[in-house]
Amino acid sequence: MDSIISVKNLTKTYKKVDAVKGISFDVEEGEIFGFLGPNGAGKSTTINMICTMLKPTAGEIIINGFNANKQKDDVRGSIGIIFQENTLDEKLTANENLKLHCRFYNVPKEKRDPRIQEVLEIVDLVDEQNQRVEEYSGGMKRRLEIARGLLHYPKVLFLDEPTVGLDPNTRAHLWEYILKLKEKEGITMFLTTHYLDEAEISDRVAIMDQGEIIAIDSPKALKDQLGGDIIELSTEDNQTALEEINEKFDNADVKVEDDTIHLKVASSDAFISSFIKTLDIPITKLNIRKPTLNDVFLAFTGRKIKE
Amino acid sequence: MEGIIAIWQRDLKKFFRDRARLFGSFTMPILFLLIFGGGLSGTMETMMTGNFGEGSESFNYVEFIFPGIVAMTLLMTAIFSAMSVIEDKNFGYMKEILVSPISRVSIAIGKMLGAATVSTIQGVILFLLIPFLGLSYSIYSLLLVIPFMFLLGAALSGVGLLFASMIKSTQGFQLIVQILVMPMVFLSGALFPINNMPFWLDVIVKINPVTYGVDVMKKIMIDVDSLSATVRETMGLNLTVFGRQVTVFEEILFVFAFAILFVAIATVSFKRAHA
Image (cartoon, rainbow over all chains, first blue to last red; front, top):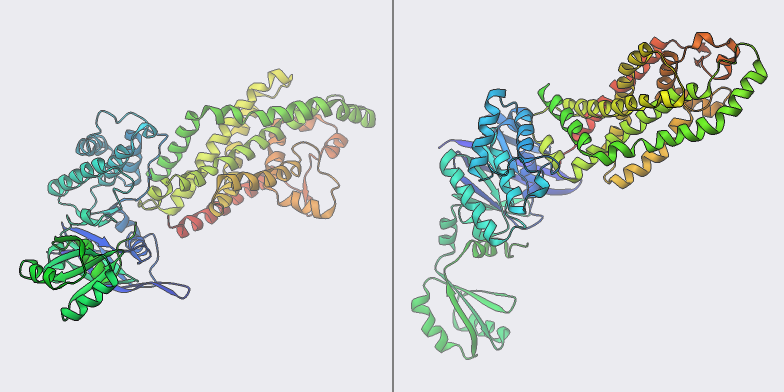
């Protein structure tokens, strides 16, 4: 498959701080690309540079064949952006917001109305299109923003924390819409989110930390890389337990996070019974599970993703 | 082009939906007309007739300040309309505009035209007061002054755009504007003649675009020729810069250049802006 976004040695330096340290990656056409990282990792800086809103210190970004630093308007016309915060004009109706967008993006006059109805249908807002946006609920506003982002048929849709601040029910719905969109339109999606369970829908994820991309692969491959299962346990004295585990099980991959000990093993089935027998300190809580993206994140960055 | 019109129409639409703003902005000019017109006209007119006698009976102070009050309304509305830039920033809409392929100069021009239109409309609505103030301007002169009001509104909104691009909060903007607007009004000849000012004040008067705006509006609206030379002199109706009297054409050119300069500055600020 072809790359729709190609980033090479992208660097951004503020005064003396390196926010983005020469990263390179490609996003393939039609995929959902998850872009993860803790706050301050340089995610927003990277996205702003890709979206032509920030001038890189060095490096090159090609989107849809256009150079983001030189052919800004072509790049801007090729992408749609759903921002983290509301960017609708609340004093106008949904329909008026969409019309303005068509004009900003030079959608031909005769195509405007059919397209507006088309995107409204995708997000189920046809009947509410003549209401002012200020009367909308949070979920409806998000849906409208997604609809607006699609109006000019972008090649890439950037979703920056699209579900932040929404209740779980609305969040689930929104993902349905987004997935429907991917199936129907085959649009490439560039997604950032704090909810790592949501990032599971990505075809590939990149994890960024301290200005560098430290991992990039499919969620499954990343989780497989961690290998095996994760055992989480609490004991009466975690510190002593930790010493004991290190002493009795050579090369044990163990970490203490809050008041839980995380233990990574190749296969829990064979390990668990001997483990429980061996440990002298009484166990108060025990949980065995498969690794999630959260564990991947923890393993790579040594931190949990912060809200 | 489409982008300019879209931005311009959006601001107009929002203006007409905001009734409070529409009516609220009339309080200040009406207040000024009442206070200055009612309070000063007796004194001013007696002074004229007393001092200059013949030829000055026809002098009407309210007629003299009315174009100034209209210019003041233009100034205030144009600058305050530029506040929409700050509102758009705060409500996030500016991002939607900035990430779109509209050229930055179109954004600046669209915003400027929006503010100019809104202020011209406000100014023209003030014309409705003319019969109630016992004034009479020729219809022709009123029609002639409207395009110039639009130009002046555009130039002055440029000042607003400049501050709107530098200030983040609407409160801060209002504060700065209030500090700025009053001297611009008082040192423009809108309300009283600006002759024989101390040098440093005279410099401000001469670089103040409102001065030229007010002067052009007076020259178009008031039948200057019917006034005696002394009255013209006293009421500052022959503005001189570097010791020579400026023509209407030069003044319009100055206002136009001022508008272009500020649209260029605004464009640069939109270019730098990254939402």
